[in-house]
View 1 (tube, rainbow, N blue to C red):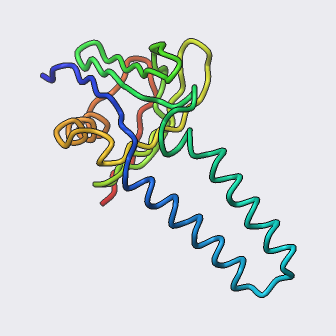
View 2: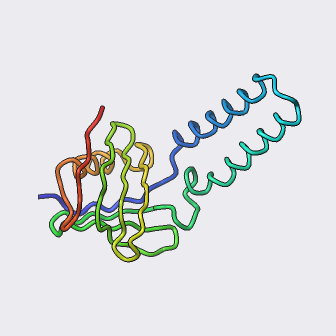
Length: 154
């Protein structure tokens, strides 16, 4: 029915812009709150440190646990993901997530180490045909011995 889907997940420009604008809004809120200057500086430093710590995992996908590729062999009902450490891991289950026309949110459990990974795939992280195929697969296909119950939205 479907040929296997293999897709490399690229950093998203939309995610980068959203993340930077949220950080800028948080910093602006701190300074518009008329707090004591030393507290405003401390909170601003905290926001910037948090931004730096999370940037490699969420935005540019350079963290060792960031997902940078996926492979779904529909006929065998097998999904695997490639982490930034270079290894492929089989997916045991996909927990309920959401499918938007611009974002896929997946909670997946890996077979090898029973680790849970939250995977956000933005529309501009994949080629348009890959994003569309993945959306369809998530809605209508299943994994062998896996929980797969995604709700479809917008």
